[in-house]
Length: 77
Image (cartoon, rainbow, N blue to C red):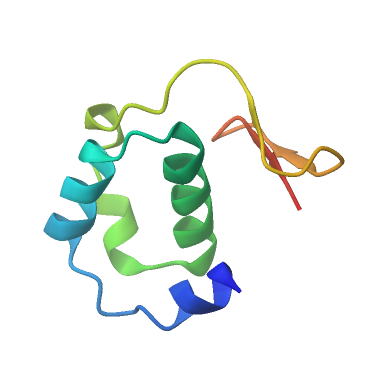
């Protein structure tokens, strides 16, 4: 359901998204969001400065038996 909601948000503004990601305190949320918007292929994704977004250290698990995404170090379905 979250993925479907993101599919409808084609008008997200890069500056707003970047500010929200910088201030978000949940590493899992940030990694999951980045994983999903990259898969959706939003044009603004390539302009995000990931160096300014704290993605924490180590692996995170959303789905215990999920597939591991090595770029965002997260296991999900």
